[in-house]
Image 1 (tube, rainbow, N blue to C red):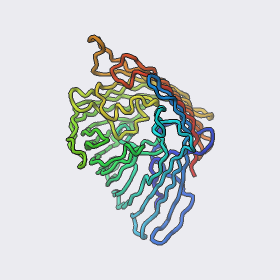
Image 2: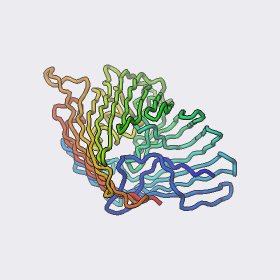
Image 3: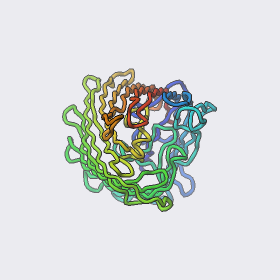
Image 4: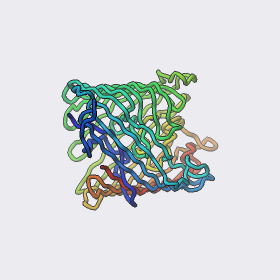
Length: 426
């Protein structure tokens, strides 16, 4: 039987180190530690992962104390063929997060800054697959990572990931063309407060036009709901590599939500905003250089500006997560993010990368009619080292410098965050 594909799980063990250079691991194929048959289940395969992380957060401008969290996530996955039927398989995954009593952080305790890794345990994935030819049908609770998770992702950086209950079909019958469609009925967020029903349709296609160019088109119809600011998003992205330059160019429009969760009852959210992104980077003699610009349109009289409620938000607008809630919900004043990246990624002693962000608002006026579009700056640093293919270390820091007169409230205060983690897969 073909190997079971295990979707995005970050892992590590209880030591004083660990992790990956990217905030979230991509979809990976893991080697099983056991394979056997049990009744109607054949070719049963198990694997597990651990993630232990120390995180410190301190945000000025509030009455909360600095937060400290030591958390470990344990994940256990099992996949198997079902009934000996060709193409039919099942997959299940459970995760548990504990803080060992180190709970001086919100939401575990009031009065501390926020670290969104509360103690929790749940079934994160449980789905049935049927593959026939080049078409795969999936039903059940599942992780979904699309492209670089700008719009839809598993939020694998946090200890409890984001998953969905839904129905998904993928097809790659035409060489170079990948098609995907999902209908989602529930979103299980990184905390219980972000878990709710939804009515959402995801449509995605990408085509490898030539080695230097891949075109991606998408339509994400996210229904309005109790924890979701809904909208219809349509966009196109060009990406690839020309010579030594990796590039991305993307544009999208967001319009009124056409869908609404049945128990919401407050009507469909309104939106009319644009999104733009350009990104270029290169590696020369092991050194990374790059620059990017990302722009979110403002609300302009609608319920919200351009937002991304299902994204892996930690990957965007700085590791400090200052704008995480803002860009996932109302984004009333718009947001622009101009940033550069530099690092050394070619050595045997690990990888070190730095990012510097300059943020601005799109549609604001400060005191006495004086324009004030400054939304702060942020410096991010991340170092990773792989002891082996299964054991990895990460150290990371984020330093956000706020603007006291910023119209975006989240941008008015300084914030510092530090992480040390170690990962182990088995």
